[in-house]
Amino acid sequence: MEVVVALKFIGTDPDSGQGQSPTAFVDPVRRELVLQSWTADEATVAEVERIFYPVPGHESVLRIPERMIPVLRRAIEELEALGGSGA
Image (cartoon, rainbow, N blue to C red; front, side):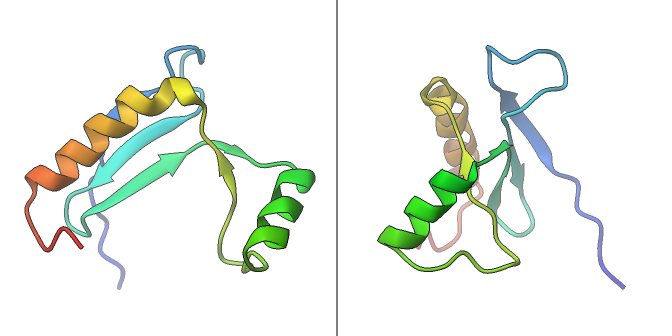
């Protein structure tokens, strides 16, 4: 049985409409950043695969606009405040 974890909402793209992407959350149990965003187009995925490796079927390439930096910083600060290894 999978445990349902309550994600903490951090913020959304200030230029997106109500209920739109991108959005950042923190999973306090897994200590992970969770992002909802636009799926990258085929050309972007192809470029990622050219530079790095093929994208596995269980992964996605997302596009996050620069204007999300303040939201992502808040999410990272939230994770850091949870403590842990800090990798």
